[in-house]
Length: 449
Image 1: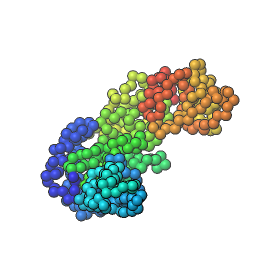
Image 2: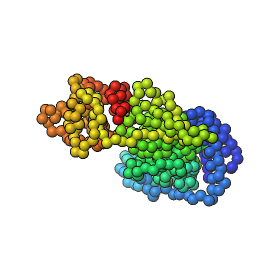
Image 3: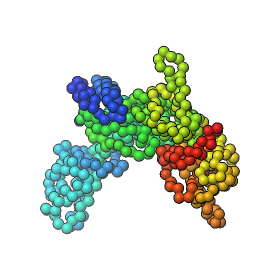
Image 4: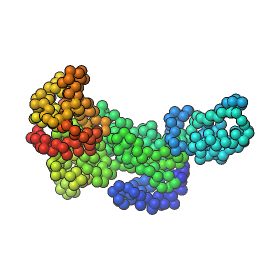
């Protein structure tokens, strides 16, 4: 386990050799690069540990639910309540040897048990001495652990936290990540996730947890921020080291996305992956005008502009690979509303303040046959798992029922599905699939816009 003051030679060499084979996306080069960065950072930290502050993040009481994997250990405090023939309540702390004293059962070894397992174990031991009783056990304060937060963070150092704290919750509580000086300005109002401000400014996206001189977990912070899910999050133990790797593969995104900025790409990331990380298009029908500005090789001035026509059905996003320093240019939003799908004249309609769905449908001639006007959708970009999709039931309106009016904004898409057409759900992949697979012929109409 990574402890307070590890000797500065052997463990670091072990880290270097063990992690050469770590399963990084992108192969051995990524592994060697990250091991070198972590070992250098940890060596600097251990040599000057007294210069770093210790931050106490542990509250006085247990405020968050513990994970199912939480196990009892020395320092945990619990309350044991007996009711029935015997009425008693006691607050007990697990001792250094992992045991508690519960009369009349005596000294009980409880270290390593889950909270439900603790209750069953204590109950089985008390049942040897007591009858007609009811047992309740509550963990009222988790033990404190010491972990290390290193790398691209605002406040590296030692952190005191409650056992059961996860790696993501620790960096979220401890403060923002260090940003890359090569950044693009952005509107703070667009930043809704606690990680997005740093990630938009070029911070590293990889969180590594090191335990027992081995890398125990690697979490993609950008994926967590985009999808809102903590897949891969890791529960910390005493002595763990969290390392935020620097951004070694920056790509700048500018133009008609929700969060223009500098991002870190993974090897084999496509243009769609990068657009999703930047919040998605705010105008779907500009797919044919995307371009990448790539700096020329050393010794050559200027840059090269590479056009990417995402509306071309023959274009495969995986055929294009980004390079560090690339600038992805996305066309700015036009003041238009896109009416697509099963309508007589699918087109981009100039935005008019106060116009409703019916007004825009009237301009394009209304739905065709066969169509399903009961499930018209107003899709508000950006494309992400949190994109706003509002249903509009034109069929119910025909039948005289009251239908909620949906305000329309520039860049919105009004999608009229054909009859019995499957719905692909939200998200950048599903929505782009919906448009490109079923409306390629329609998309081509917009190349002149």
